[in-house]
Image (cartoon, rainbow, N blue to C red):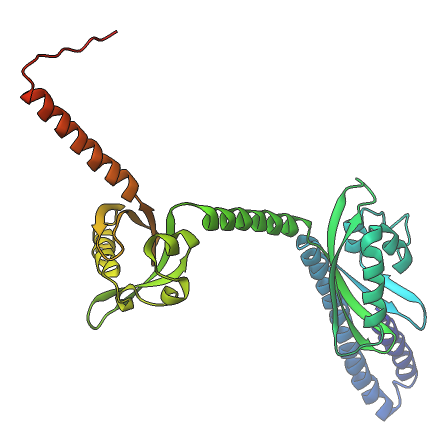
Length: 326
């Protein structure tokens, strides 16, 4: 704005001077030239001012959309310039409240305030690092907790600029995601059934499908006898085990028919009956759930043998028998 005012004053003074001498040959020409030149200067200054105003409005709108405010701190003058958005993020009215470092710091909860001040003091004397931390404030309007993130950079000794962003919603998403991951990890590690993640890759030359182990749980190791470090990041065909060959047939069926495939069979190598359920939850990925059903199958066999013996006894006995149903 100051450039516009100065250019206008210069244009006015020069115009008046040249107008006074307009009837004297050379001054008449100069009056036209000076008029054109200073009109151009005035035009550039006006356009520049307008563009700056427009850019500031766009910047304010962008900051509002992403809940981000800007600030600049001058240590020598002990002066801080804070954008309107910082006030709004803090629940303060810019018309009624003068926000400074101390006032803003008082909004921060006590357990975060010391850390905030330490980071701020370090950033005032370190040109190489970027001050970046998160902390919790008490919103001045609704008195609810908000999580703010501040980033700052020292331009020159004593002059710090930065942004303040409200990341409360992102922290909630992050916390919920972390909680979900924790629950899944606990279930993954404690479940009785073996769990296997495979990443599927294709070789266009020989049209083969490769199933790479990306993760297995402890139950998988216990059931199959295969160790995690022996299978992770390896193709199932690279594992020297008959188990792998049987699985490939199941996996190929999953990929060809695009459906869940189940298998119950005896694996002589580990002397166990296994039940497998394989499915693809996403293109390029496959999951297998493995259950040790050896005990169940052995009990079924014993039950059938017992029934057969009992039937033989009845059939060979000379006396009859009957059932009484209550």
